[in-house]
Image 1 (tube, rainbow, N blue to C red):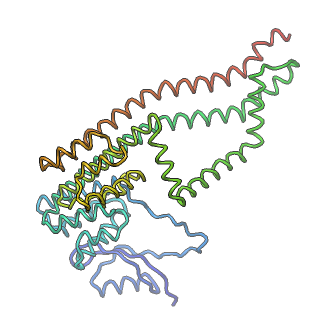
Image 2 (cartoon, rainbow, N blue to C red; image 1 turned 90 degrees about the horizontal axis):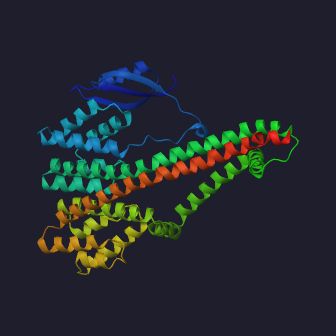
Image 3 (cartoon, rainbow, N blue to C red; image 1 turned 30 degrees about the vertical axis):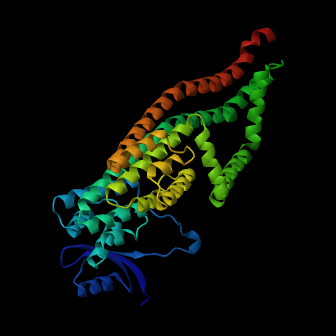
Length: 404
């Protein structure tokens, strides 16, 4: 009998949920082998291998919100005195997402095999180096529950900062996208119908109407080509940015110089940078090691290069405030002053946290102002766009009396 691949799930003698795969001839053979291992099979399903050209390389992604929720729940359970393995088992049973449940099962199994929690988390890309390092520090210090609570708070505030910026961009993007789509539909379907009516007038059309008709004909003939070229250009530009570091470096520098986007980017990166550094330093991580972990947290190449330079200056014996002051004005003067006060008073972590809270409020305020300013701008653009089309289509009809 030919062997096939079967995925199975079951319950072991301790009542724990286990899962795996097995190559055998039939589902009954799978159940028999599991029974010999004292596992009661609850589901056995045959797996089919698709041809290589049909396989989609799509991996379910675990979001930051999912990680934040798991971290908060695990910290609460540990703080309540629940052992780590039992806490992970409770999270497994209460998780509805298959990807998260599979990850928790894997972490649970590795810890049962003698691996520490931080080492088990390093096997999953959903947990970055910062997360794993803080968990390792918590394990060494015997304060894993406290460290997980700090991590959960850090992730929640970082996610709130990211969502505030994203929310400000969703509304104008959605409105402009709908406006462009409606305009394209009018040009493709409505304008040609009016064009047939205008042809029967036998008179010269207004310049605005002629321009709209020409635009409609161009989109009808070359629209797909232009759309393809647009997507191809965006794809090529993305590839070039990923390939050439100096291109990304220049783009990040231009972004800082824009009138509104520049201050917003600077404040958001500063808030994320100081928040992460405060979390690491308060956890007992040495400042030089914390700066090494903070390098890529902002996602901005200028901040990454400045952090690397600041770390080198600290190794040479300079103070953090002095190193920040020499970062070509990248960090606001308030950050330098707060770090200087923190170094003098021995409360650098609290000063960094207060700085992060200040710039998070600055980001929220800027986003609110930006949303308020964008609304009338969007209304003007929509009025000009739709009003211009309506005027172009009805001007010849208004002038019909003169033609007759």
